[in-house]
Amino acid sequence: MSAVLYDVPGPRAKARNRILNVIVIVALLAVVGWVIYRLNESGQFAERRWIQFTYSSIQQELWNGLLNTLKAAGLATVLALLFGAVFAAARISDHWWFRAPATFVVELFRAIPLLILMFFFYYGNLQFQLGIGPFWAVVFGLTLYNGSVLAEIFRAGIAAVPKGQREAAYATGLRKNQVVRLILLPQAITSMLPAIVSQLVVLLKDTALGFIITYAELLYVGKQMGGRLQYGFPYIPTYIVIAVIYIGLCSLLSVLARYLEGRSRRRRKITGAPPPSAAEAATSAEAPL
Amino acid sequence: MLSVLTDNWELFVDGFWTTVRLFLIAAVLSLVFGTLLAGFRVSPVPALRAIGTGYVNILRNTPLTLVFAFLVFGAPKMQISLPTFFWSAVIALTVYTSAFVCEIVRSGINTISPGQAEAARSVGMTFMQVLGIVVLPQAFRAIVPPLTSVMIALLKNTTIAAGFSVAEAGAIPAVMAERGQNQMATLVWITVGFLILIIPLVFLQRWAERRMAVA
Image (cartoon, rainbow over the protein chains, first blue to last red):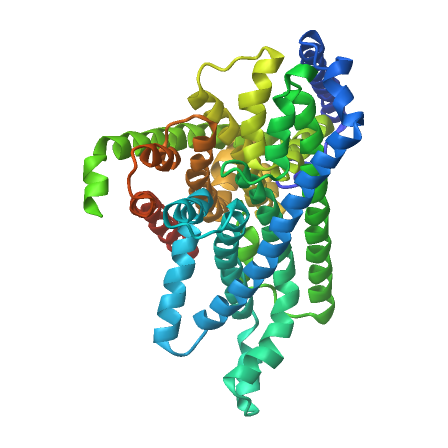
């Protein structure tokens, strides 16, 4: 409840809220009940639609899909972090001929829809016979998009370190390289970590786009499993299982991001450093999608 | 290069027109639904808050492609039929985007210091006056820039509908492949199309940020 919008409730407001609470719970139960009724009516809880999950070959299939998802996400994470580091370094360069192309590349890849980026590699492969499968189309697409977003996070994080730090470092005679490496980066990393981890959640979620370009990741496997006649087209049971896996994985990462955010906030309070500047606030407020 | 565009002009125009329609309808619906959810999340009724929090946590951790797949392949199996693939796409995009809109509106409201609203209440303003005259105009300032980011993301996400039988811009490459056209040129033109749509939004965002920063 937001303290901005409401006073501390008095006895009458408390009673009213309690009544509303009960009404909402009843309405919610009604909706959930209706969904379960619909699922049951259409036979989605029937044994033959769920029995395949007890077969070890089907479990192996799911597991392979999950492994493919994690493989693409893991490799893309490493490459995107590298890409981000290189382009962030170029963007804070003192030389405009370094800065301008890097800015252009980062802005461009952030503006192109990720699926179209993947299509470039996918159809490029079909047209020029590059010999790269859908796996690499997914990985490269994810790398270019998330790498660009990460470059922006890195740059904003470094820019958000209080100005005095940089000035003091230059005053002691450090070179730009040393200032960034020894003074700015160590301080920026802690404030950037939550944003980085949130972006990795996005990356993990976006591996599901591989479904569209026929990469055999979790969702693709799910489509195949759902389309089996002998189990009565168990799309809904399969998608429920897959949703649980995705939500579990991403929630773990989200919890990590929140934990890191809480930790860095606590640390900032203890050291009495100045409040985060506008640039940093902008990165953390930017919704990762 | 240019002939790829001019020879298939109608395909491109139809595709992008569908994209724009998809974007506009989903944008309006997710703004409305997201704001409603944000209302849930700041309400004094615990059950409403729980619904809002649960919805946001689940949807933010689900891939949009899965939402699409569930609506397109799963819903018919529950005997819930949506009129066309276009509307399935609209619903999938709305359901997904409103979770992000909700978070932005909620954190926007929370940036207002409680003293503002307390002062407003103490001069006798009603709830609607506090909200309409004091809280929302100030929250708006914090909301507009990130909300534009979400809208840009929504515009880009419309391409996912291509994988689910909606003939929008993302579906152009598949048709062009059938026609045996140059794929790279096609994709470059699609990129150009998206840049034309996105760049005004980016400038709108910068402009709004500057304008809001002054106040």
